[in-house]
Image 1 (cartoon, helix red, strand yellow):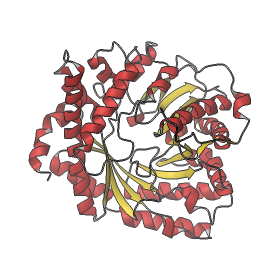
Image 2: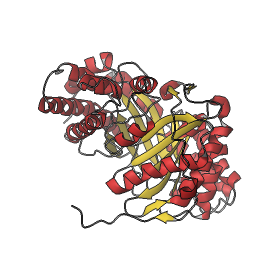
Image 3: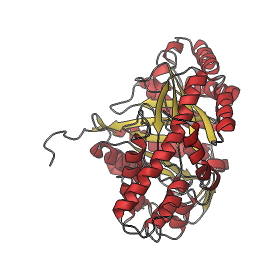
Image 4: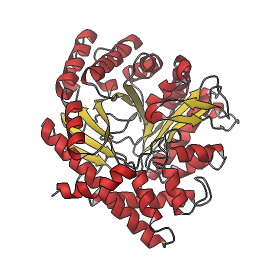
Length: 454
């Protein structure tokens, strides 16, 4: 049973170590909004979201005031629009209309982002889902709150290389459409392998078909808390290091559990999961990279970084699962570049490269996240990077994702400015050798064999 004493124990974490609840995300099922008429569909979507989420921001603010726990974002995720638009969307413009409707609804209820402008195409694209993907450059340009995702692979189905080829082109087009703002449209688009149905974090959140009609999911944070705890055991062995991370993750997750239960009760909406991922911010001291340094690495990217990340990810999960009966989402450690000042510093010092980040994604919570690359990067190269990351997820039976931002007009050494939680990012170098002939083959990479493991 959670009580207020547990919250009081975390006051120092909140006041001095940047502990916060990163998001309360309300998932909403839109299947009952489907219609053959696009106007009717958009009306149904707008009214369903506004009616279901009308009190979300108010309740979040009340909990924040009463318990003194910062709740940074209030968000919404919806059923993948690639499914919802199947009956009525015949053109790219139809999907852009839905995106604008989602944006209007999000603004009406006052949330930061709305996710679910998504397609699940791990085995192949329907004509409708291909239209949604082709609508992304305009949809992300003409909306503020809408976030999009495309799941192009899974361990059970393999990897849809046709979708990956198309997305390389779409990401480049999205960068062009939003080039006046450092190609920020690409920051609202993530490509997944093994996407979870209950992820509360943007840009990849959507309300999966296995979910109830509506649900409250909460994502916590707290890299600064872990860093401070590790400073107290600076010279200890790995057993003490692991125990310290586990105990700290437990305390962080209990705060999220309290917020989730309160939000669920006040909104009369079922509690879904706690995502106990350590999600950094641009604030100094709230960094995954600084945790590595506290562990004994000179900089993120130094030899030993992948081992340190594996240890961190595992201990966060072990501590978190003891604090909540329902842990889900991505749960682990995020390693975005633009949102983590320590990562930015490591890139600027050339301690951290795109190739090292890819190696780290084998053991982290997600994948290549918020990475700015030169604006003249070829679409086929973008597709190749995506394919590599999807292969890691498929073979290792884990969620992996790519959020690449080719910043039009900028080159290695320049800086992209995104603002807010998205922060800023140095433009990272990309391998110059071509993979175009590989990518243009098309078709599907088959799923890996699931037996004969050694």
